Amino acid sequence: MKILEKIFGNSTHLDIILLFYGTPGYFTNITKLATTLDKSHVTVRKAVSDLVAADILTELDIGKSRVIRINEKSPYTETLFNFIATVQSVKERRSIEEIIAKRAGSSRSAARATSRTGEV
Picture (tube, helix red, strand yellow):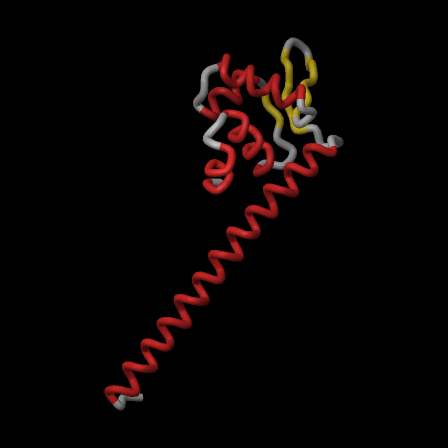
């Protein structure tokens, strides 16, 4: 979501948050997450550690793997996801308003052209 990158900058933290936001129920491990995001393992590990410390993500030990998932019980996650949804709805509303304005402008232009030429 480009507007969030403009607000927060292009960061691995944001990439991870948006991945989990856009994929409900998603879980993964560091290696697969790094591959998915096309980032280094070290960069992703640091961002995941920060997001775990912020109570946005959780890590679970499953066998020899550490699985990462969103912390659905965290009030911070809920607030963050609500914020993302709000930003997204503002952007969508703007897009719809722009489409309506363009169509209205096109309709007026067509009406003026028709009235000038006398065509119906």
